[in-house]
Image (cartoon, rainbow, N blue to C red):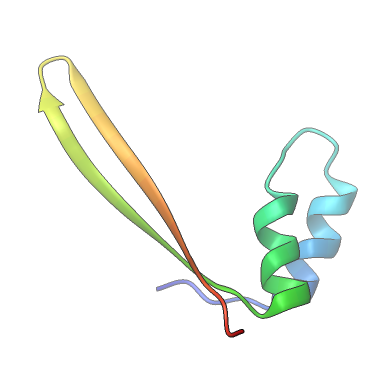
Length: 59
């Protein structure tokens, strides 16, 4: 598991004009969301991979 301060990452992403990802970082920063990813190989030849993003929010 990789951990970093969401606010520092948010500011870093604001300065980076090439990338996206601010939506997920905003949820982490503003709503203390917990994020996770599930990566699965669906097919080997040619390789097909699915990535599922999960978000946990306290309401």
